[in-house]
Length: 235
Ligand code: B1M
Image (cartoon, rainbow, N blue to C red):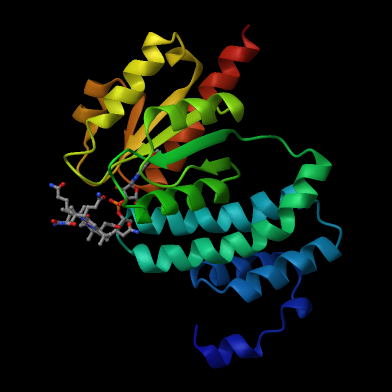
């Protein structure tokens, strides 16, 4: 849509369905102000914060995620979409906490020791938050102690690790081996990612899964959380 056409749309004049459709477009186009406005309008129409999150933002981000996976959207566009999503999320976050919306899951993520690449990790964090996960981002250059301390303190479901260098990716095994040594490995879902990794590497270091990109990370996390919930429900 051109800027002119976009300027003509008054979000508050749209019906709920039209507004949600428009928000999908705005999210896709990375328009943070419009997303924030749309969220406020829906809340003003007595939408539950969780419905705004799932039906407007997460559903919109799912479209972005799919097109990213399929090579239709690229990193800069996804970062813009994720930024718009963050704007909407910031409005919803306190309301969601107050209304006790169901917890999708919590992930601690960080780039491993010796590695300062963080663009991919940040993208994963944003997409995970967009999918309703709570994310604790440890940043870059994390020794094993940082991961261990954070997963315990935060009561995380998922440990995510990122590495972009062939020299730093073996450190993931150090972290996972430490979890094993401490008898903690089965308490966490461990997901790994980064450009030089592959499926085989993920298996070799003992991760639950290797995630090719941020969209795959979200899907994989959802899958593992569903399994975890089912196992807990089965007692
Ligand atoms: Co560096 N760098 N870099 N670099 N850098 C690479 C990785 C490199 C491949 C470039 C090259 O030579 N062709 C090369 C590594 C070679 C190798 O290991 N064999 C390299 C090198 C050598 C270096 C330095 C050593 C250079 C030097 O100083 N001589 C140095 C290392 C510093 C260090 O870490 N100790 C270095 C430094 C840097 C910059 C600081 C300049 C900058 C980083 C800035 C930053 O991150 N803030 C940088 C950059 C930008 C790159 C490239 C060009 C781009 C990386 C990137 O952001 N990609 C990179 C070349 C490349 O990869 N093509 C390169 C975009 C990002 C969205 O993709 O990170 O793959 P990616 O993340 C994806 C997936 O991998 C996955 O999802 C993401 C989104 O789809 N994913 C996860 C990632 N983490 C995940 C975690 C998960 C799940 C999925 O957990 C659940």
